[in-house]
Image (cartoon, rainbow, N blue to C red; front, side, top):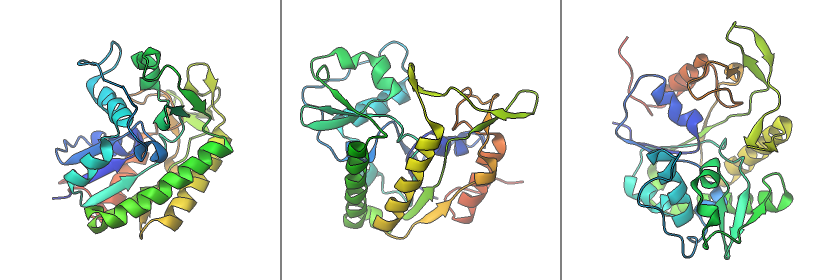
Length: 259
């Protein structure tokens, strides 16, 4: 039975969800960034016993893992047979705080943790800046070394190549431009700039990592107005997830669904 770890975003996790498959052996690491994964824990941070108002348990766990840096230990302990990387969550700014790094996700903004002493002095590092890209490349090199030095070396490595959609499928089944997107409220997003960044990230990552298998469903990168999680450049039409599932089946990364 495959044991799949995802280091990425909902575009990979939802491949399982939208196939109606309940997966017990699936580790999902999200709302983080490669340089944040390898940084030191945020000194003095203590998570709330219960998710702050407005956050569900899973997103809160992802946020806490990013701040306490617990994800890599969980990944090694999980001993996955397959590791899927996607970089759609690599759209948030980083935060420099107390000599370490964190990810400025929506969940962090909503949690209220930024007002606590441990994070109050955090300084943003814009995602599209040269400084952030340099940090990300360092994180990619650390991930490559980490994979080679741990039991992950025996796992099948998969790069789920993705981009932001610039068109949407309307409720009337028509294609239309996708405009005025935001990463966080009040923070407009440049789709072209983020897609160019994703292209550079993927090329550098493949050059650094052990051999990887690339999967993609470029012809179906179309945002869906009727998506379960709402309209977004990376909430795609159903055919997208079906095509990625088909490619994962070919890699024995998922259990086949009886016809």
